[in-house]
Amino acid sequence: MQTSKSIEKFLRYALGSLLALLALNAFAGGYYGVAGAKGIPVAWLKGSPFPNYFIPGLFLLIVVGGSALIATIAVLSRHKEARKASFVCGAIVLLWLAAQVSIIGYVSWMQPATATTVFLIFLLTWLFPKYQRPKEL
Image (cartoon, rainbow, N blue to C red; front, side, top):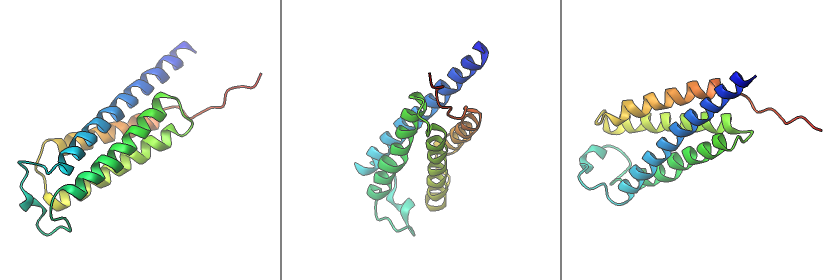
């Protein structure tokens, strides 16, 4: 039984770490976008509904970063909805990446790196044990 507890602990910390990294990345990128995304061409947004990076940055900061933070806390605190939070976060990030690439195209190594991170999150979420109620005394 010690082995299964060790595996569960490894999965919890690995998944929690990836989600925390994703949250930090989204918060930093979102803040950068809200602050004006200095050095990033606004021309990339041509044809999109956005005149600048404020709204996409706000979405990245609140929705993407927020979902990753919530999932991180859920996983590390062993919340009964940790698997669901982690999966929803991964889905949000993949949708964000799909929208981003459809609007501005492939412009950074961060896009495939983030997608790879999300697929690892999905794998670890799938392997993560389902919540089990503690046995009553």
